[in-house]
Amino acid sequence: MDITSDTHSQHISRQFNQELEELKTHLMAMGGLVEKQVQDAVHALLEGDSRLAEKVRDNDRQVNDLQLQIDDECTRVLARRQPAASDLRLVLAVIRATSDLERIGDEASKIARNALLLSENSGGIRGLVEVRHISEHVRKMLRDALTAFARFDTELAMQVVREDESVDDEYGSAMRSLMTFMMEDSRSISSVLSIMWVLRALERVGDHANNLAEYVVYLVKGLDIRHSDPDTLDQKMLKKS
Image (cartoon, rainbow, N blue to C red; front, side, top):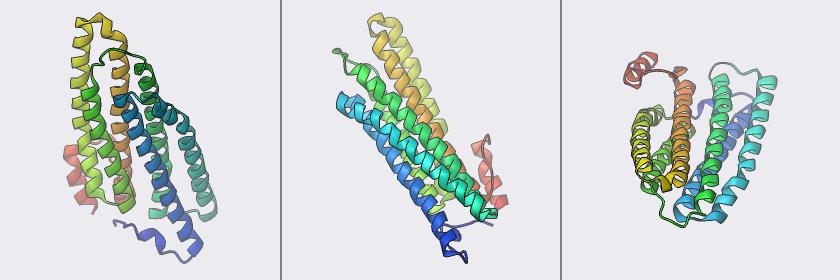
């Protein structure tokens, strides 16, 4: 049976209801912070803002601290409440989601570090158009994945899953273009390599957003869709309904 966002507020114990609600609230707070980290890192790169890049790099500790806090809360819920069924799926999904969010934070830090390197480059930088385009795509995936988690919205989650392949195609096309440019102009090798690392980080953000969306399906449907072909998922989900 599918669950809704209200399912976890129907326990006899008000304290248990509150603990589960706090898990979701803290996860969304972590998601908001990570989303801002990615946004700021990309902005720092595109605008050559070294101060903002340093801020993103320094704020990574906040992301790590939130992961530790949420993991501790999940451990206490598991130990005290011994949740079952949909409650257990919620706790497990939160634990998995915090891991992916922490890794997105790491990718934002990588982008910030490369932004600092590129801020020292006085010449034109190739690949910024591709960075802007792919960053907008993966940030929307991340935002939609977090919204889907907050609303227990499997339809929105599936949209995110389907978008991941499109991001992979865009990433591959951008990398081929940059490789060609780098071979034609050896003076650009250093800056292009930094842009390639940025694009790789953004592609990984898309992968982690995809993971978050998959956890929503697991949470609501009890269906593990990892490593599944997106074209066959609709039939699986209909059978599970």
